[in-house]
Image (tube, rainbow, N blue to C red):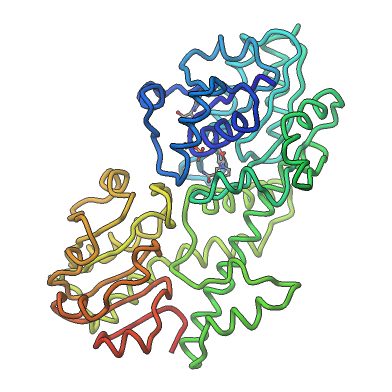
Length: 434
Ligand code: NAD
């Protein structure tokens, strides 16, 4: 099948490369000329493990290409995916649908013959109806169907998630479109991936409900962690004891500095707006958003407290600034709140991140980015782990103690064992553990 991706970001590029790997002929389109140029020169504009090899192979075998020319790419496509950003609209938390609407119009202007337009962007209920209306108004003669096919991949494990998803959700009541979608995802039938066909609005809501539930689960264990600290319990053991219950499950029960990233913050907020407008407020999700927002500041306070109540003039070393490991994505990363709060309290910040420095430097002022964890810790008054990159999991704690000015380790991801840290001579603070 001939597939066109509109938007070659984290989702469009991974989905495009994976569809090509399934054997389809894929053209990825973007408006960002530097992105397309990088890709056409053999580079990858984002950090995602394994993506370089996947892209290289599929380009070499002639199934994957990149272009700025939307018209050429859309005209011949069987399916056109819209995978553009849907960020929070500044000020009110609604999803900003301007990129989706613009893409729909651009596609409508040039499509030729029956085309399935697939919304892969995360969009509020009813956006498929908007896209359908825009296309019909722009091209009253067009033969098309609009399908919702939300994406559930996680950055950092995106290829595996796309190729071995827990499920694929397809929202449409158009039989012809359903056949096209079935054909596109046919390789997944082999490994018996559940493909859930629903109405379009239901599909749109499934994506938001899934993200809201996961955000709520993280926030739940974070609040339990706070309680653990007050009553002398261990949140990791509580999470294990709770998560072994099959009705609950152990995933997304890791206490930490609060969720961030390109999806949960904006999607939880957008869902609360949809629900308020529908007259059925989602109080659990509204509270989740509030609790998570206040948590970032609380994490800065935790660092300050670990330093005896004052970080003024102190050198704070930060390990990990991306919102999670194995990505360079800095969108809504907890570090973007924790670091400025520490700076406001007078701290000087030095940081190391294995892949996020370039993006982080655009968003954080007055941070001295260095090239490794031990250089980062050198002479520091406190070392703070914000993101749990694998390479931070087995640091030589004795070496850290020797290199630091004061041996204080604040581990916001609970990757170290408190006894081990203590044995190395460090004063250790973590989340929800004695
Ligand atoms: P992104 O910002 O990385 O990429 C979006 C791309 O679309 C950009 O490169 C932009 O230049 C391009 N673009 C915008 N308008 C265009 C147009 N008219 N024509 C061509 N290109 C255009 O965004 P992303 O992280 O890939 O997210 C895309 C969507 O997928 C969002 O709705 C997001 O919520 C959803 N999603 C993201 C993830 C994730 O982990 N990032 C996971 C699941 C779903």
